[in-house]
Length: 349
Image (cartoon, rainbow, N blue to C red; front, side, top):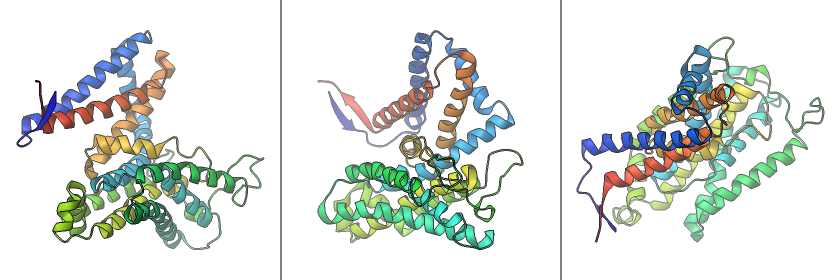
């Protein structure tokens, strides 16, 4: 068996292969549901209702999607230039730490000044955290997959140290958590009485801006060129290292915004379980979106809907909510296979 590049993607194939990937995902998930002793139709219906069956469900799905949009954008930007950022989780926590450090009263400003200051500082923290592995890759050829992945554990241990030290809430009854940020540092809610906050709007704006950068600026062209062929980009006079550095700064800053939005918009403080893996799930979101910044929004809402719907479904159908992880992972694998089949044909000999 060998793979041969197709002369060009057809419109039919571009549409048919993703649809086939979704169908394959549903079939494989159905088999697991049957093993669990439930009806696939009933389970999928409960997931859909739990994710979008009411105003509360829809708003919860959008709330869950907010950090996934940021981490998905971070991964999409980095992967487009073939900078393999597996450390969005670390950059998320870096943004959260800065948000708490500045938002618990260290700086006294009105909201209109304090929130932009926190955003800029959080973005800088995440950007610099990814710049380190990028520089190691450029200067010494160190694999950024390893460095960014290991940074996740280093940063999480560092956060644990902070929560047991200088950031620990003296009124927290011994729990490893920070103080709550002041009202001036909090993002307003978009719907009164619900958890959806202004961070979702920021995420939508960020996706639009990233799309503009990727499609309508010289930086976006250079990133795509470096991702397609570094040798050709170098021959064309594109400064490879400078493009990778800019990509790292943009990607790390976007991931840090996820930490900012979770603290300032939702939780109000920092804990070790602030993220249940948003940084890693962002990889699946970016791949499902085919690294398209606007597609990241749809993919993030889709993934968030599965998780939110699975939580509601597990309470009614007695099926473990971990089925959501299986569905997302299967969707990622089938989508990657669909992308391969849309670009290559299989030859048997």
